[in-house]
Image (cartoon, rainbow, N blue to C red; front, top):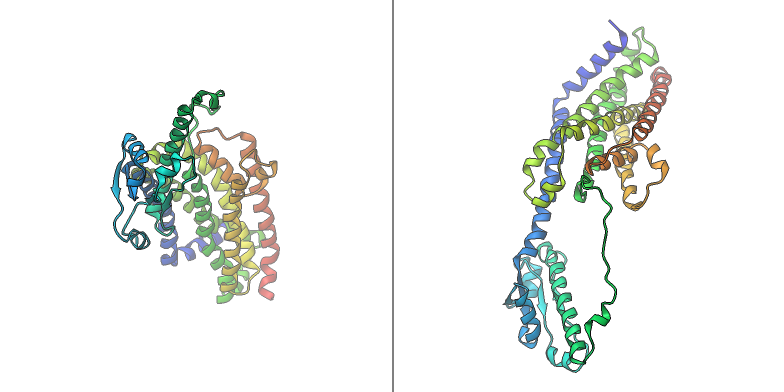
Length: 387
């Protein structure tokens, strides 16, 4: 039997024996994206629900009859805020912000004096906070109308303030999709890949070293490269399996999205899934090689776990640099693992074609990283037993 295949089968069998950890990793891969999309869907639905309530809770609205008239003309209803509204906002009994009108509000405006309107809400009350934006938009409309009416009463044409019209012309393609919260999905995928192979990488190196089962393995007539490829192959297989399951979980996730805007935005097809796998599988193989190399330098399972957790944090957080480069991305992004993959997955989510050059660069970097780590593992494998 081929020594590499024998080592691969042995390591894969060992990984399958720890069924509790394996099942936890696999179920996490299947459930993470659906859970994330359900949360996004619920948040967006809550925001839209606040905008659709079309009710304004007000205190002392009798001091602003013109404002009340404007609000009613916009199709809103006005209700008096309940007694003790501040405490009810803090305790989350009240799910809307409260408009506070000061005394002599209308009189001050009539004398061209500044008057303040207050929107009362508690930042810990998310439901009420979601209602602040539509209420401010409504009040901005009233302020603009009041200013124009004031100019007209003084014989000044409002058109003098609107001599220039500003129009927007969007250059996006008709087939391009809008990406907002779904832009977080590449982060979730990369995190799932990193966590998916981590425990297998630790167990096959530092775990065996701590249990004393690495020495008997070295007594077999195999060289360092055969050991390295066999162990890495088992870890990479699990990591790739997690990547495939996570991508496949996108399809049932679409059925769980209740928000219409998010459902229209998140349109994941078989072609998108294949593009994701083309991007993610080489990354999963490269990360597995790095995890095996790092774990081999550790003398205990706990030490390897700590180091791999730091690696996981770095790899998972690296794509966040895309948020700080909202313009044209620097060229070195294409050469950086996890950032390059996140960039390409975002293009797929937008419905854009991923360039062959980008795929080629990412693949070359992953191959180089894998070969470099395996070379280190092959040279280190026999020496580590003697330490």
